[in-house]
Image 1: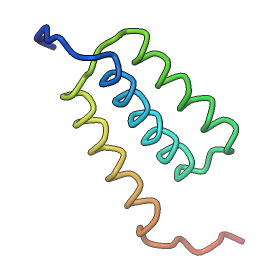
Image 2: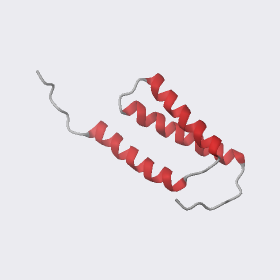
Image 3: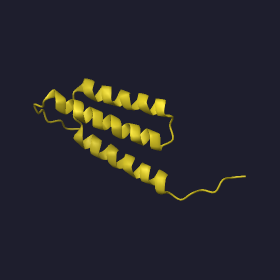
Length: 84
């Protein structure tokens, strides 16, 4: 993935890390994980992105789109009847 060095304020990296963590938490919670596990995964993602100091805009767009599709499939997908 090509990278472009840009001088950004550290608050920008913090904001994008928090946004990524919130999106990850929502995705994990929608997929049926327990809230504690979802929070741990989201915190890990936020901390990793902040520690790298990278704003992966292209990656966020691709992963965010995939998460949105998965969430809509989970919420609005066809209901399967329970098996007996």
